[in-house]
Amino acid sequence: RRSSVMSLPPFSTQAKPARTKYTTGRRAIEDDAETDAYADGPVEILPGVWLGAEDNATDWSALAERSIGAVLNVAKEVILSFEEEPNSPQHWSDDASIKDDISRGRHYAANDDTGRPDLLYLHLPWSHGQNDLVNVGFLQAMSFIDRCIASKIGVLIHCQCGISRSATLVIAYVMRAAQSPTAVPEVAKMKKEGMQGAYDFVKAKSQTIGPNMSLIYQLLE
Image 1 (cartoon, rainbow, N blue to C red):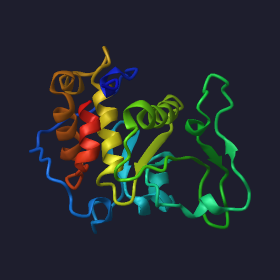
Image 2: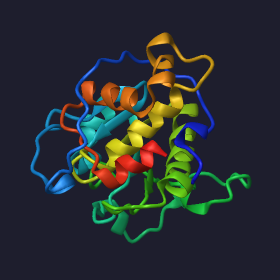
Image 3: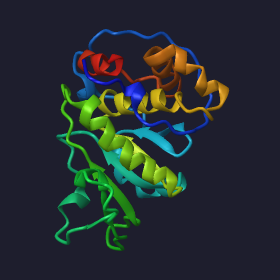
Image 4: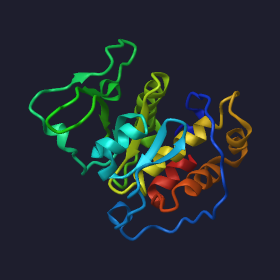
């Protein structure tokens, strides 16, 4: 049995949860389903941590309005336009203690031609059935998120539609937040509620989330 998401290093945060019904039915199309859940922009789940869809990642004005300066893309098939720019971006962090090169992220300087602001970016190419999240994927993603939050940089987490893969990561992040000894009561109570409580918390903020069963099983480990 692999180590639990709950064993990931904790950190403190603040947010207000709400309860919604949790269902485990598999989505027929998952992230490929048509949805306008984030048509008005990404949704803040925890302070500085936003959940959204592919289109939100290149809506520069919306990112600026929300003080989002970092983007974490967890969709294998989604390649954002700036990833293909000819000038190679620089590593965001040269910290030698970060042994996993991919979780460092990349720094893209502002582009006056496209209007893109200065941006930190990490692309983790997860599939709908990604099966190494507990031991690899969550660790890489949370390392990046933690450094963003520590630097007071808001981070957008997205997949294609913000329904399954990115929602799974955000749920795992909330589960870990609940383990912090300094977590506020609304978050700390999810320590006993586990994945169910974290799912309800995120679902209350973004009604269309629905991780597929393959990803749900990893959250339960």
